[in-house]
Amino acid sequence: MSKKIVKLSWLPVLAGSVFFSFSTKKAADLEIEGFTTPNLELDYTVSLDTLPLESTEVAVKALPKLGKSYIGFKEAIGFKESRGDYKSINEYGYMGKYQFGKGTLNLLGVYNTQEFLNTPELQEATFYTNASRNKWILIRDIKRFVGKTINGVEVTESGILAAAHLAGPGSVKKYLRSYGAQMFNDAFGTSIKYYMKRFAGYDTSFIKPVKNPRVDFSKINIANS
Image 1 (cartoon, rainbow, N blue to C red):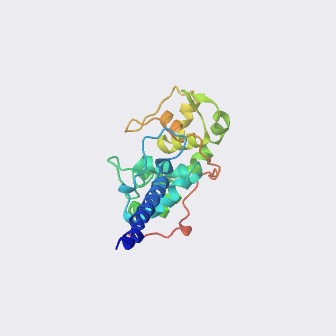
Image 2 (cartoon, rainbow, N blue to C red; image 1 turned 30 degrees about the vertical axis):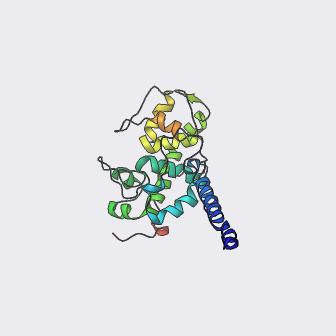
Image 3 (cartoon, helix red, strand yellow; image 1 turned 120 degrees about the vertical axis):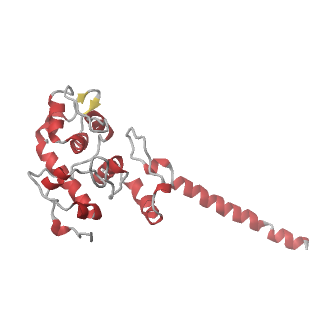
């Protein structure tokens, strides 16, 4: 009897060590730094508890790889604007993951707002198209001001493009050319300076400047309304 007890006594130890090993690895994989964008003054993180169950696995795999790429740039803006919610409509009527107004959507060739809200692929294409337009309008200012410091913030191309998404390229031009004297705050009090600092240092070379671009619907699978 005693021999059997001795032989079987290793089972709880082994089970405990396997569980501890799995738990430790899982915890390491879910370190908070994996769910934020490095080197930014961030006041948010993506909690797995807020994600749909089917999205959790995707989030775990994708978020740590975003870094300072174009994808990291747009996802950081999308999270700031709406927490990444494609169906979001705020009290001022701004829509989707990136919070576009109807005027900007029409300017980019998007007229069906319900179709826009129902089609994530269309929203992603619209974000890129708008960034291309803003980069075209601000190309001279990008060349002139990148690397300079305005109101204590180093100017970067991604900071300029993020600020243009917030305030429009015209307001960003005025801010830069007045060296920060002409301020802009949106309806929630968010400033150009804040966006320039928060979204500085991303690689936005993927965005090509285009004059008067339109969203290319031929490459988008439109969702049913």
